[in-house]
Image 1 (cartoon, rainbow, N blue to C red):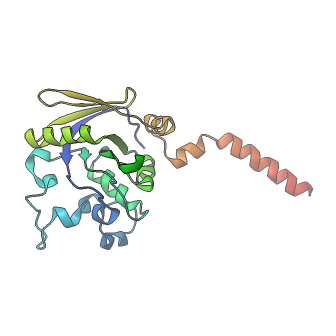
Image 2 (cartoon, rainbow, N blue to C red):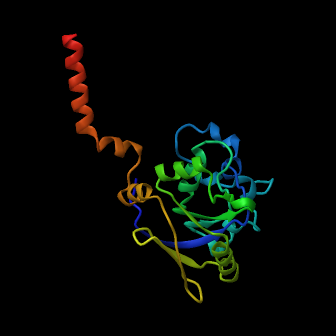
Image 3 (cartoon, rainbow, N blue to C red):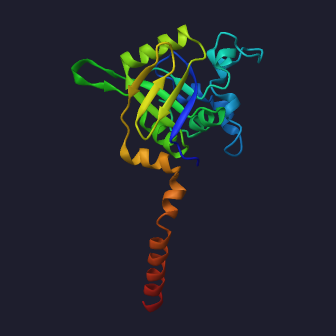
Length: 214
């Protein structure tokens, strides 16, 4: 997995809340064998018309957003099932960062920007999920609409997002220190396990000796 430190890319927006995993990668594409080939089906039912042609009204299909690598959406992104295929589709399309806002609800409750399982699966696939406040994301949507093709830079070590619009705007974000470390070092679950290879080997040797002398 490639380390994530500093990333600059075009920002594209999907102005919808509660985007679930079936919208991200519809169930008919889960029959694919292997972990590749999902990117072309990201948001399939929104990106394509019934005749299979690209939907010209969907922002991912507009020339200004061609090659976008940063996605902005509304709260509760990635809800639904636990399928990791949704994150594979996001990553294989080329998105490195997904941004969504948290929302304060009555009584002190808080609706998160991302569903927990989706967020965890993103970490395993090198995708940064970045949560901002709702007013901050509203400002981003306004810039993207007014200045299509605007770029942004995400600085993970400094935990800043800079939107290179006119005028330029910067946002601070919070991230779990462990998740930050995994992304900075480009570690997935296998790599994390291999870091403990010496301890695992030592344990197995002790276990084998115990079995032999039992």
